[in-house]
Amino acid sequence: MEGESTSQLAWARRDKIPSTLINGGIMDLLSIYLKELALRGYSPNTIRNYRVVLNKFIATVGKPIQEVTTLDIKSYILSLKGRKGSYINNVIKRIKLLFRYLYEEELIERDVASKIKLVREETPIIATFERDEIKLLVNAYDNSCFLEARNKTVLMLLADCGLRANEVCNLKTSNIYDNYILIENSKGNKSRVVPLSLSVRKQLIKYEKFRRESEWLFTSVRNKQLTTQTIEVLMREACKRVGIPIRSPHKLRHSYAQSQLLADVDIYTISKVLGHNSINTTNIYLRSLDSSKLLNKSISILDNL
Image (cartoon, one colour):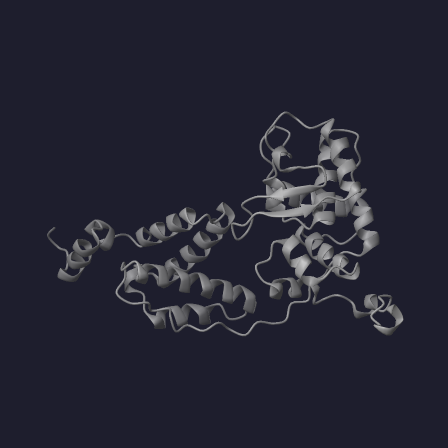
């Protein structure tokens, strides 16, 4: 093992980690961390996000992870000035989690990211769809063929169940019950039950006539599992067809949350159905709710006695 430092050899012997990894390329420790995330049940999309964010950080710093200093991290964060606070905090959180894990596993000598603070975030105002826009959207497609019926059903699930795009892609026929959907291994690795409205149940029956034989509820023209990219495309096409501003599929989830509040569903129930770990996240979805829409809601205790 000629050429290795005494400290590197000590780390390798103590943790029974190959010294080639300790000497290793910049990416070796990151690979270990990403494998740990997979073992913890993180979704492929989440792991991909971690990989992209951390790869960019490491490439910019230009040092092996075990040589990165607190000053290096602060300098990198300063280089992100001009980006949204939410984006910068997303980067900071991933960097902090990486170094905390490596330190706890004794793969680095100290946690150089432990004292890095989050930046102040701007208050997000989320643009949602109006009721008439949602009606136009779900009618942008018909039930004339497989693609039309599939796209219509996807949009109805997004709008009327508040699902994430990746949750729609991961739906299997076994997840569909008479009046609810079972969402498995969703964000946060928790399963939840989402009610199915009569309108969506009727559309699922219509779609069934065109659906190809597969374990997946929604498939591509080649009968492969549907992707989030395809959902983004069909959403964009639907907006163009009916002449409304193009927004992401996730905006239908925000619109769903607001519609539930206007229908007198309590925020805790909304949070549960959406699969949020905290009502603080749900509150963000509701923050842009136009207060004028609340005027028609009866909030008087005396009037309801």
